[in-house]
Amino acid sequence: MFKILEKEWLNVNTFKMVLDAPMISRSCLPGQFVIVRTDEEGERIPLTICDYDREKKTVTIVVQTIGGSTVEMSKKEKGEFLADVVGPLGRPTDLCTDDIEEVKKKKIVFVAGGLGTAPVYCQVKWLHEHGVTADVIVGAKTKDIVILEEEMKAVGNLYITTDDGSYGRTGMVTTCLEDLVKKEGKEYDHCVCIGPMIMMKFLSKLSAELGIHTIVSMNPIMVDGTGMCGACRISVGGETKFACVDGPEFDAELVDWDEAMRRLGLYKPAEAAALEAAKK
Image 1 (cartoon, rainbow, N blue to C red):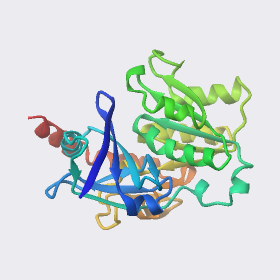
Image 2 (tube, rainbow, N blue to C red):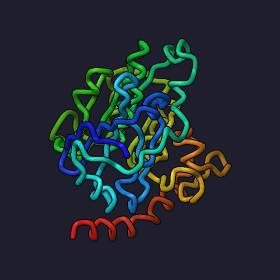
Image 3 (cartoon, rainbow, N blue to C red):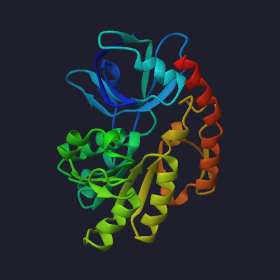
């Protein structure tokens, strides 16, 4: 059992939980994820780590209520318990395992969309603590669903863009990145992009045109988290990979985006049905 030490709603359908997780916090790194079950009958949910504190022995997750299981998890409050939290799983981001002096030579930009802001924050914070300051583009449809703004400002150079122009810049993250490079003279040689699959696909296409090496996270298609179910199987550079055990991060130019998009769509009907059932 894992105690919920803090719970906070970040917007109408996204909440943050700080969990008492001594063993996970001791060894996890940015880019990794945990598998969470609300109760003994609950679904296994893979969630990328948003933050951790080795001294306080805590791990922070950010959850969006997009399916039945996440709706059930949202009903848990501070002081209550989650049945299982397993991790850390997956491979840490290369930025946290490569030689830090080489990382400091890179001109890095992060691009986050929606819930992808949470795992991006974890990486940007780690870099900040190791003397590396990166630019961060956070995209959202409207102002109301922007999350972790103040936290991100504290560790990186933040650019917020909204589709409807209700906050920050106007337009999608691709427009913001293109403007920063072509109109404002920014130079980048490394990009980490985490968010909805369609966003990562088009951002990767743009970054290739701009000559920016880009890493993406395939966490949107993870299900079981151990490589046994095969649900997150994708083609990367012509080879079969599993997002949960080989990733979740991969070189964007090597990902077969059409295949990945098709695989993501397989689960939407089941998710919609489970969500409706949970609301009744």
